[in-house]
Image (cartoon, rainbow, N blue to C red):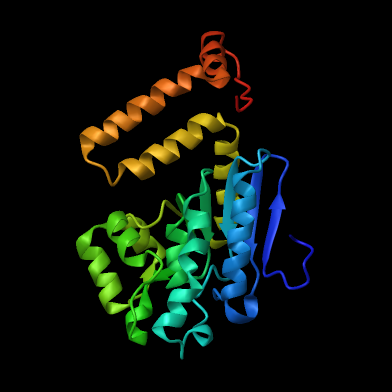
Amino acid sequence: MDSRLNAVVDLHIRDDAVAVVQIQRPEARNALNSAVREQLAAIFRSLTSNEQVRAIVLTGGELCFVAGADIREFAEASPIEMYRRHTEYLWEAIARCPKPVIAAVNGFALGGGCELAMHCDIIVAGQSARFGQPEVKLGLMPGAGGTQRLIRAVGKFQAMRIALTGCLVPAPEAFAIGMVSEVVSDERTVPRALELAAEIAALPPLAVAQIKEVMLLGADLPLDSALALERKAFQLLFDSRDQKEGASAFLEKRKATFSGE
């Protein structure tokens, strides 16, 4: 995948079971065109089934995460044309990835870029990062989960302010309202995301996958149903070798070695 001449998304799998996915379209501030979306989807589908990967870092590099969708691709599009593109299937490859995905955000994460970050499980933002859903200024609205993921992350009143005004949200403010997980100095954004990913990758992958699945599914269920889902996943993990290894290591006061079984 890395070797394609027209690749605009780079994949690198590290020795610590962390995959680094980087959007590389600097001339357009990493704007999401069809090539970027398709390559992201293909990469995330491949990572889903790659047993050598336990955590993923998604970044746009040191200067810009994603400044938005490529407006040139939809400025004159018709409703039927937009429907036939079925971009929801491309986004779904990221949303349904069972492995933890950490966004490392420097610079702008606007429109589709903000939505892309919100598809991830953890967001590490550089101090000068800026988030926003400015679609309203183009006579549009967020169309890749921006209205729904944002309101679930920050609540009605902040989400309404951000989506209705199209304002930019500086990283410290985004952290204060629960839009991102951490804010670090700009040069620490990617290293910090890699640290978190390596920490998670060293933990039992079955437990990690169950935690992610139950938290995401349970968030939209009634509490009693969500608690039942949690209990069943909790009980299921007692059939894993990693659970036995973790318990034994704790009792024997040694470091556990998790196999993913």
